[in-house]
Amino acid sequence: MHVSTYDCLSVCIWLRIGIYMYLP
Image 1: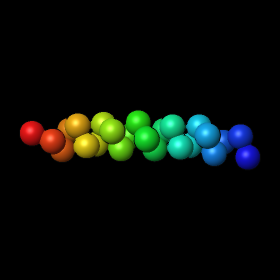
Image 2: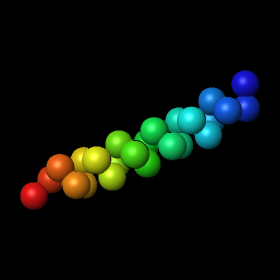
Image 3: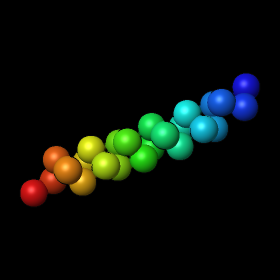
């Protein structure tokens, strides 16, 4: 289960980008 950490990081980054893009 070493992909869990990487997956979390990817999701966090994607979420951050999405929020930044969604924000005005």
